Image (cartoon, rainbow, N blue to C red):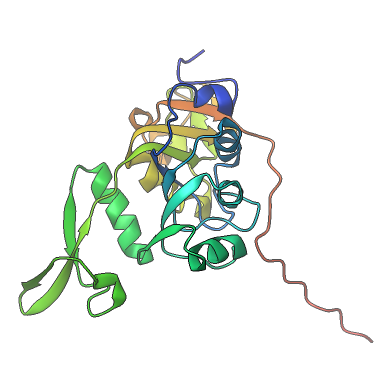
Length: 236
């Protein structure tokens, strides 16, 4: 068996966790969320975390579990909706939040993974996003300097991987997972299925195995729905 494959999330994170670490987490709402790894983080008791993620799931789901247990000190996110505890902690001054436009967050993580310490963007110029940031004029237009993000640990959720760690995401569950995987010193992935090396068509691979250091099979999953809308039946 590949040395990258671990029996469960707890063993896959063994030796990697420490208080105050910076975690890059894939997922968007409840889609493509590394549920098993989040549960293992919660069970470990690690605290003072800075987490870069598009959002923090919903109350008691996804990263919302770590907010509830007060293990997260700071969130770097683009969206705080759907999570009342996130909102409450932020407004009460209990949680530090660095708001970041969604496209900028994606590019900050991509840049960090590519070894680029910073880049300039027009997004946020003239808004609160620009407060305290260096600006520069290019061709008569003002741009903000945004720092790349590079964490201690990336936790991601994939669909199918081979034993070498080459990984495929399923449809929109790719979201931030691919980018976050590259934006940290070590990436741990949970997937629904692991197949023998050589089974995947190279053209299907979204994330090369060189980025994935450890992985687990997290299946089976309960497919959670963030907001369920049901149309009322017409009364005939």
